[in-house]
Image (cartoon, rainbow, N blue to C red; front, side, top):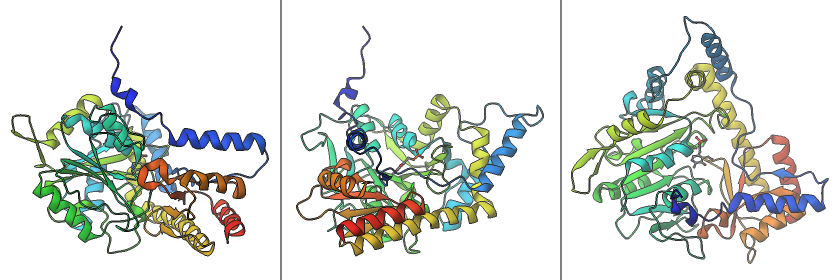
Length: 410
Ligand code: PLP
C-alpha cells in the first residue's frame, strides 16, 4: 500500500465553515421559511467591472482567430500585465519593484500555500492569532508542526495574539523566528498596520535574517492615506519580504481567479550548510515546473483593472463595500457593541457581549436576527469573544440585517 502524507491527519477537520453550515442547516430545518442573511463569508457579491468583462470578451474573440490565438503563455504571466502591476501598484507608490519580480498566479490562497515549496524544514514560523487559516494548515501539511492541542494550537508554531490592547496588530515575538506571516488589512479583524509598525517588523526581520510573508489581499480597502498599501513602501523591505496580492476582492475576481506574488531579486535564504540562495530563482523555477500560467483571457481581464475606466469601476466597487462596512459599524455601535475594523477593511470585528462566547453569540444572532456571522474563535484561540461580519453583500441585505440587530440588541 502506498504511504500517505500523514501530516494531513494532524489537521483539525476543517472545523470552522463546516460547523457554521451544520448549525445553519439545523436551524433552517426547523425554521424553513426564515429570510436568512449571510454576512459570514468573505466572498464578493457584486458583478465584475465592465472594463474587465469587455477585455475578456475581446480576448475570447482573439482565441477564435488563428492569427491571434494564444497557446501556453509564460508561466510567470504576460509581460504587459506584469509591467502594469509594477508601474501602478509599486513604482507609483515609490516602491522599487520591477516587472520581473511580479509572478502572476490564479490566487493568493495557492500562492501563500505554495510558497512553502521553496523553504526547507526547521524554520521557526510565526503566525498571528486569529489568523487566515490557510497559513497554518499549509504548514501542517508540509510537516512543519506537531499535533494540535485542545486550544487548536499546533506545536512548533509561534502564535502572536492580535488583541484590542495591541490594536490587533501583532507584537514582535520575544524569540527569534525565521518566517512571519502578516496580513494587513487583516482578515479577520479588519485592522491595519501603520508605517511605524511595519518598519518595526522589517527591522526585526532584517536583524534576525527572517522573511516576512506579507498578504495584502485587502489593500484596495485602505481609506487612510497614512497607511501603507505595500510592505515595499517600508525602507529595507526588499531585503526581507515577499508580498501576496489578489484581484479577488478589489475587482471581484474570486470566481475569475487572478493574483500575483512579488519576490524581490536579491532576497535570500540559506542551504543547510549556510550557503545563501536567491529566493527569486527558486520561485521562478517552482512556478515554471509546477504551474502553466493563468489563462490569457483572465490576464487580459486583470490588465483592464489598470485602464482609466477599470480604475474608476474598481474604486466604485470598493466604495460600495466600504459603505456597507460603515453601515455595519454604525448600526452595531448604535446597538451597543464595541466594534473594530471596517474602516480600512471590508471586515467588522465585533466584541461579543460580556460572558457570551463567539459560538454562543453566533447562535444568538442566527436565532434572533436570522443573520449568519463567523465566530472569531474559529480563526484562533485569541478570536474567542469576537465575531466577524463581512461587508461583502448587497446593500439591501446589509441594511435589513443591521435593522434586525438594532431591533434585537439596541
Ligand atoms: N488572503 C487572505 C487574507 C484572504 O482572506 C483570502 C480570501 O479570502 C485570500 C488570501 C485568497 O485570495 P484568492 O482569492 O486570491 O485566492
